[in-house]
Image (cartoon, rainbow, N blue to C red; front, side, top):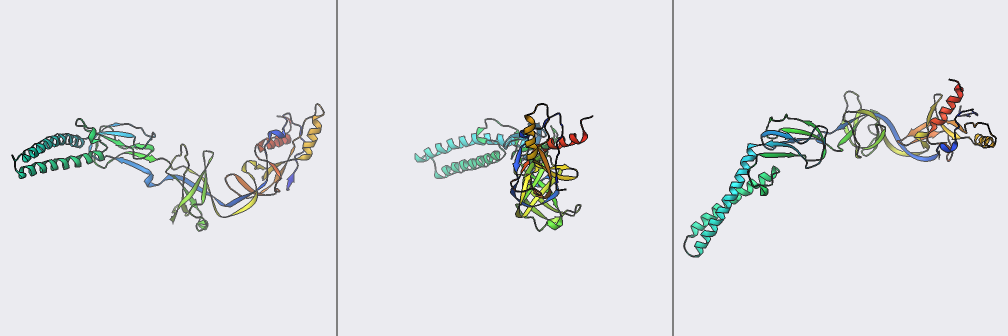
Length: 363
């Protein structure tokens, strides 16, 4: 049956047409689409392990698991004998350099007066250059460790670890007050917005999708739009499907790794179909339907409004439609005409009124 008429129903609660939003059937461009199973993942380079550049003793953490951090934020403190020695040597060399500079200046003055030899002047210059080279090398090493050498006033054993990029702390890898070796991971951080959707594509579509094609994922009742960045050359052994990776470019709060969800990939040449909003669809008597205004019922209600004590009927009919294709917002359908008005949202009010009328006014 292509069309069912909702007959006049006596309802205690009146359904006003003005409360129901309407839209018109319009042409909409669709790509081909396939529903897929998917999983939230991160690539290996999205995990950042912060390691120590020196051996030492882990004294403090400045962050906790699940805490968000900014690039350059300090995350841990290590006390290191190596750092202590380097900073002490640097301060010592600065003093030696000052003394060597004075000796060189004094020797140069004596040389000008003919009171010392060129060889002695050269020896003082060599000493000065040697100390200066050692100081420059040590200053570079300290700066690499994040210690500003020119700010040092006393020797320090403190070596601070900093986050190299913004992200979320996933784990503290070493217990407090334990020994830390060079290049040993101390903290694991997951980079912000480095999430990917891993979708499993049936083999028959492997040559049809392309890099850049859109994949839409519904996560926590929100549609996330992603785009394919990789099509892996190896079939997944468990599902025997092609794995495609799409990057999550928008900011999504509380996106949990390894979550399984549904995704839809859109690909191929675009085609136009008469379309309605997804919110307009309702499942009724095992068929997809869209509610449309019934002009005859509306006129009858207007006539009844002039007579006191008479209740309104439902001013809508329903149209059975066939779904051809869809995207995240619209559905291409057969069964409606271009420009025809339809209930674009809140169709459950109309459907509820129909079900109530079919059950009667009893319990």
